[in-house]
Image (cartoon, rainbow, N blue to C red; front, side):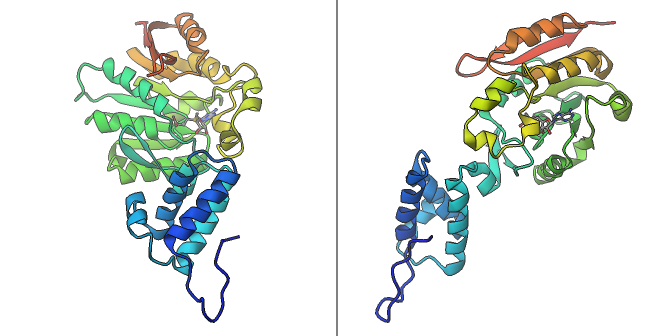
Length: 302
Ligand SMILES: C[S@@+](CC[C@H](N)C(=O)[O-])C[C@H]1O[C@@H](n2cnc3c(N)ncnc32)[C@H](O)[C@@H]1O
């Protein structure tokens, strides 16, 4: 419950923003949230519809009833370990603002490794490249690439209609909807290749890759709130790679490049899978912590 001071004839003031932030931070700390003061400021900012700096500047004024309602409800969600990005509805990726909802995975900074790897393979950044993004979610990978490649066009595929709605909105918000198309389809379906009806120069994917045993150990912020269809990669975490590598030949033009994000133990295995198909591995690209995060491969001419 909100920590309002008791009302009396002599005390009819609503609590100030500062008082609410202090009480909120205490509540977050009790719920085991790291950085409770910073997060209370973020939720306060959301409630008064301002930036976190403004919250501090306005901290001596009273919080309105409407603002307090928003603060209390978002505080409750965060104490329930819902990710902050779902509460604010926004996450930055590749320096672009993406809307996110519980239907979409929250874009991770690690996924920028895939974007860097792909861009390093493209000599002519103004070329009319065709990109296919398998499991587009919020659209972050496809839209980040389209933002860098001015004449590229892309198709984002997802089995989740709700995720695709978010991806479309992000394409609109970023002024990229003219070059991005979104298709609701399942890459395991026998009609998948037919549904796409074309080949691509670039196929990218950050598929679900958490193994069943790792799923049990995920932080509650992820396991209880992010979509299981974006996480569950089957018994060994590799189901989606097997399925996509199996059809890659039909998706890529000759000389086309495929780029997969991988889990931190999966780089070598996915690289081996690719080299056993019609692909030549280019690199296993490491993230800033030195962990293999993206596997890139080129299709050998048929
Ligand atoms: C790990 S998320 C990646 C989302 C986004 N590309 C990103 O990097 O943040 C994987 C996405 O693949 C989608 N997906 C899972 N299995 C699929 C399938 N068989 N066919 C199409 N999409 C699938 C999920 O709905 C989810 O949006």
